[in-house]
Length: 89
Image (tube, one colour):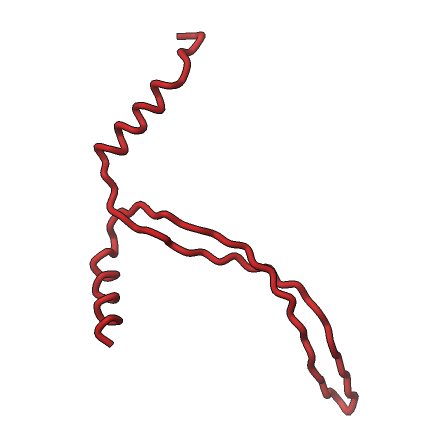
């Protein structure tokens, strides 16, 4: 219970702030077997062994950290300097 309360407190503290996130997305496909019976107005409908592929995306956050604006700005400046000069400039 204490871990859960501590996690809730951390999430509450982080609300409304800017964060850099390292995320992972994984696509998973499940083969689902559906089997059901429907009775409607004295008519019995039976469906058996219907196979469906269900695809879902799973998202996960590997890391969350506060941005370092000075470091990130220098990195962007390095990237801009790598571009060749414009012909029209």
